[in-house]
Structure formats: structure tokens, C-alpha cells
Image 1 (cartoon, helix red, strand yellow):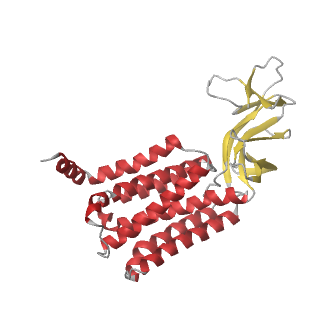
Image 2: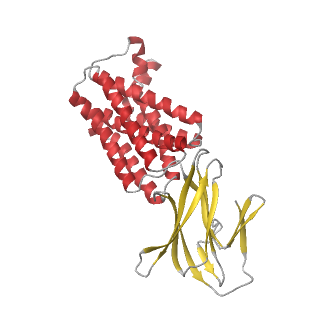
Image 3: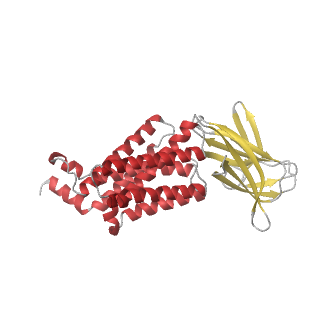
Length: 361
């Protein structure tokens, strides 16, 4: 057996594990090399990837229905189409997953990642192999929507309903265009509905539902750092933050705010946004009451200016507070949560010898 025959046999025997490896490979590749959301090269690369994926899906549909066959000299190259699709989809999904994670509180990230992992696992089950095109169309729809969800806020300079609706409309137009191109090849409309329309509608329906529920993170905004502090000062362009040192070396803020008489609470956050974005956010203060229900005490508006790589620096001060459990949510102007910070206020006696650790931001 020649080396070429051995390689072909190996690929055929381990087709599914290799597809998974290529998918994960694309995922890991962009985790390592991911750039800022507004990087023009990255945006162009994503657009090229989407075009290649759309092309592969188009010819895969025609190939499976015996309406197209590659020329003899391209047959070998065509046999690697599944690997290529897995790599490209994995690469794009890694980029968008990371952006969603950065732009979300833990709950929102968990829901999105759980859904993503479920789709990936379902794609590899044997009983759905015959529907692989449909599932990849679903992946493609996720990627197209996510691409526009990042692009429109950067282009318009704000996040919210307008970018979301434009992203949805643009995704619909892209998918309709692909379906119309396939219709010209005289493909059975029923097959098109099952393979193209159904997964596309399902994906857009889920994204719309999640957005209305506030579960779709407001990409490309993200909170890079946040915390509660006893003191906050500005000095030579830097924020000087002071918190009480604890036994936990990784602690960099007052998770347990020991409130002596006269202390005020400073909430500080670094919020990343691309250079073109100037938008309003809200710092939403809440305290847990005796029934365990979170009650709003303050909503502090803050205007952010994008472009700083480390994130726009902002803060809010609270002097009127009570002992107990607190949280501060960083929210968009329509109430979508970007991050959430929990802390506890513990009253203590006055102590002039308290030891504070200083942090520069």
C-alpha cells in the first residue's frame, strides 16, 4: 500500500474524529490570535471565511443532489471539504464566542456556551449525519448574525435595538440570497426548506428570543476590570484605587467592604468599546432585602468613549448605604447586562490604623 493509499484509508477510518479535531483546531487557533473587534483585517478575514463557507455549502447541496460534480483533477481537493468547513466554522465560532463571553455576565455566557456545545455535540452524533448540511447551515446562520452584530455597533457608534434589527435584517437578506441562488439550480423547494430555510429560521428565532430576554450580550462592549474600593483618586492620568488587604492574594478589591463611620463606597469599572463607539451605560446598584429580593437603590448614568485599549475608566460613589449584600450591574442604555459585581458591606468600628493596598489603573 502506497503512502497516499494509507493516508486515504486513515482519513476514511477516522473521519469523524478528524472533523472534530479540525473544528476544535479552528476554535483554538482564534483563541490564541484573536484581535480587537474593530480590527479591519479581522473583519475582512471574517467576511472572507463567511463567503468560503457559503460557497462550500452551496456546492455541497448541489453535489448531494447530483446536480454538480467537481472536475476530475479537483476531486481530491473536494474530499477535504468537511475538514475545511469544520475549521472555518470553528474559527468563526471561537471569535464570536469569546466576544459574547467578554460582553456578558456569567449567566448570559453560560447559556450561549451551553447552546453552542450542544450544537457541536449533536453535529457529531451518527443519527444526524444525513442532516449535516442543515446543521452546518445553522452554524453558518449563527456566524452571519454574529458578524453583523459586531459590525453594526462599530459602524453606527452605539449598541441597542437599531444594530440588532439591522443585524437580523442583513442576516435574513444573506440567507435569502443564498436560497435564491440554489433555486436557480432547480432544487426541490421542499429540500430547500428542510436544508436551508428551517435551520436559518430556527437560529434567528432563538437569537431574537434571547435578545428580548436580555440574554444576548451587547457585543462589542466588555468590562475588562471592575471592583469596589474605599478610596479613589486621580493622579497624573491614572486612577489610584485603595482597598483593604486580605488573606487572598488574588483579591484586588473590597469584596467584603468593611465600612467604618464616614466611609463611602467607590465602584470602578474599565469598559472596553471600539474607537467609534460613544454610548451611555448605567451603573445599577441593588441591595438584597430581608426576603432575599434584590431592590434597586440607584441607577447612575455614565457616558463612555471608545478607543482606549485598556477600556474607558468610570466610577460611581455611594455614601448612603446599609450593611448587607450588594451588587452593581453594568448595563447598556436598554438594560442589557454587561457585567455584575457582588460585594458585602460589613459595619466595623473606626480604626485609623487600617492597612490599605493601592492599585493603579
